[in-house]
Length: 258
Length: 210
Image (cartoon, rainbow over the protein chains, first blue to last red):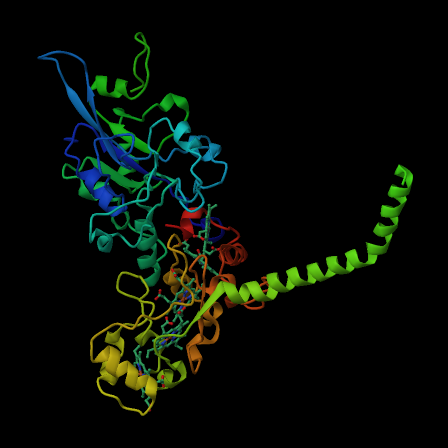
């Protein structure tokens, strides 16, 4: 709505420091409980499980003493593409997912989604998940769901929302206090809050005062599959060359971007 | 009888029934219209009374202000319907002689049980609505979206859609969708219509959805 009220357009994004990430999985747990993601009877069945935030383990494939591993947390990249032309948004036949030009957040409206799963096929990051069943919560746990996030039903796709409900609530607080703008720390995602290593930094990529603005400019910063033109808003940082190389499909003779 | 005779006989029959066919067709249309516009809406909505009758008129005089019962919490969220905490100061004991008050004190206050108020304006679970944005930022009056409830003598009958479970206030009382006031209807397009007027932009999905 900022067009009418002349605010500066925001572009929320994340910088994840892979040198700091220990792979503890706290972000995954925090994300699930924040966003009412239900447990599955068998969480080892990966075709069935839903992980808006997922930590991958990368290996450099070398043997001792050069062996090295890296953990890579993967939320939704909230691709901007070319002016909002994200892969998932452009294929959705129902406009159940749209690109918010005021925040840069890619939405998913569960009640509009009819489960064709084109978006899942289009997403190069596997960030989208399908609900094969209605959610079942362990006895009594339904009382502890987050009221600010609507639960999903069978037959719809879901994904990370950058905890945009926290943005809504932060705005609510600002308006009630007579402010128009929110501070950097008033809107943070659950995973960024939970990370014990402070590997995840979240903020407005357009705002010079936010840490992400500075961090994304580091020469050791890269994005996943950047060359597809998805223009993601999640940046990764690593001082290790092989990790940066793993971010895209480079040919043997090519040098990694960063 | 030859073939030609057979044909002309049935032709005659068809001509005779022409008028009656049209008549039955028109009766059918009339019945369908009546079912669709009058009977179906009656069947569709289940009428429910509030657990106790409550007069805003009486209380506005006693309390003076809407925000002693409907207030903003410190974090900017809106308290919505009042809880017993907002009533107990005055209603620990019955003070008047109305039946409603007696029921309220005996069945709820004395047993420390919250009143299960029915919310006329309740939106579906997937909708995010912000009172702060409208009441504080845009300085809109309560009446502009809720009509006269805030000054009424009694709480209106609540009507629940039997299929969706939503309150009738979302679709509106007028089955043809004719709207005279902002508060007559509060569907997605009604929110969007006002937003477009006020800000020139309908907004993206995540503005009002969660």
